[in-house]
Length: 329
Image 1 (tube, rainbow, N blue to C red):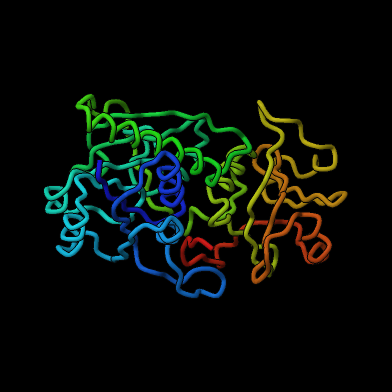
Image 2: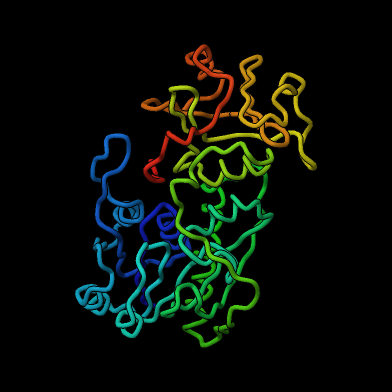
């Protein structure tokens, strides 16, 4: 089947690569325009556009997927189906009428409809998530589905590892669906069950918060890794926290003896033997990877060698220290 592909972030790039590995090469890739990226904020193509170039695929970069010019390009490419993976725009009725649209949604719909399903599922401490292949309709993420695949979330997983697994499962689901469309065996099912909305991340969602149990603090940090980072302050030092490990709650290891003074004392900092612990309402989290403002990521031992003498007694985000927005590096 001749199909086109629309996507922008790393998740979409992985899907595109995995589709190619399955022998599914779109006749056209649609992605968003170059944007400022990285510490230097230099214009760079979105990951999906970069992957299309690597694979030698024709790529159209546009800030309006609903423009008549895009539909003309789809028709010129001979695409009867448009596969969407996190493109970043809502499709217009005219586009939906002009081409059959499939969406790879990174949750088990109707759970976690919306822009940030992976991050919200991790932050909520879900034990599993999944991917849904659905038909796009005018109602956002409400269309009928044909393939759903679930995956468990381990304590070491983060948004990046889960996205990579779901991209692979999504590509396999699209391969199955395109085959079914060709031979007429696709079965569509209406969404059933409890639904809730996975809203786009706000600035307050990106804060390192210790007023929770250790597991919930850990979940929040890993929901922001490896692309965003949990923002914290240590006195006058601004930090991004990338990796943690929780202790001291049911189902977790006991609090290490060196960290017992911080257990249950939210925000309290304890260092011992090159390790850094922060107290939570219940238990503690160990900080494993951190990034001071203007520096690269580093493990805790390296951080303590350079900044240990500047650490205050408590770690957190003061009300006066605001975050403008969550932005990927």
